[in-house]
Length: 72
Image (cartoon, rainbow, N blue to C red; front, side, top):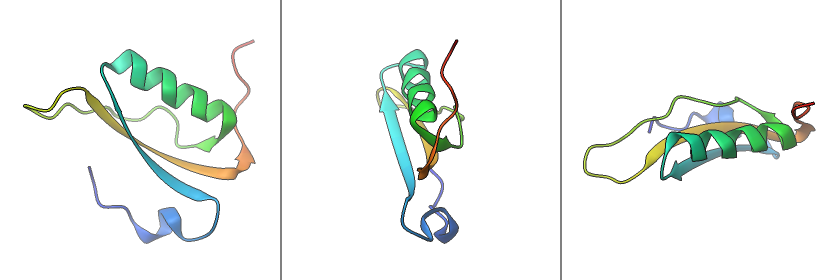
């Protein structure tokens, strides 16, 4: 994963979440649900690392702001 920039955690309420899941569908489901709770960077790029199980993704969130409405 890339280095976390100071701007991403420059004040209370800003978080960086590194997500590891078995597969892309699970990681996407988690990121989509978090997007409903908080203002986030959305479903991001997922990566696989050779020799390491699962997929990895990073999500940036502002937990002070509400997220997107869920599916109607």
